[in-house]
Amino acid sequence: MESGEAVNLRVAARFLRDVEDPVIGFLIRNRHGIHVYGTNTKEQQTEFGTVKQGETIDVTFSFDCWLGSDEFSMSLAVHSRDGEAYDWLDAALFFKVTNVTLTEGIANLNATATARRHA
Image 1 (cartoon, helix red, strand yellow):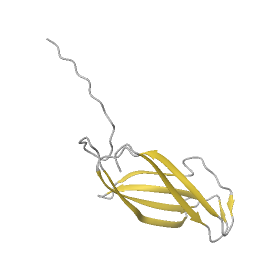
Image 2 (cartoon, helix red, strand yellow):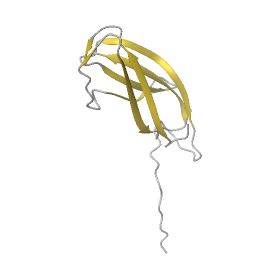
Image 3 (cartoon, helix red, strand yellow):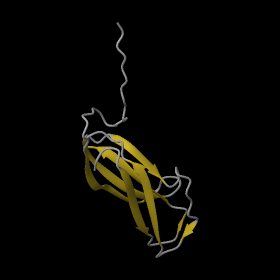
Image 4 (cartoon, helix red, strand yellow):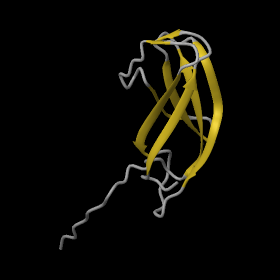
């Protein structure tokens, strides 16, 4: 994907047992394993209440991908509000970010430059 591109990440979680207010999230790491960004439904203030066995919850995370040019992995997780993991898919997805403009680092801050010349 191109740096700055709008992204929709859809996570579908099917529950094999009743769960009280699960949290669904993702984590992006660069190729060196550094945590670049992560969020979840708890941080996004989304609550589900009791989810019954056999139910599926679809969550779509939308963001503009202002990452620097690099290769990244994405992990997906479902856990309790206090952090007990129900399911964790480490490196479930891999993607590469490109940029038509040379940038350095993990993030693309999309900076602009202005200059004035003085005599």
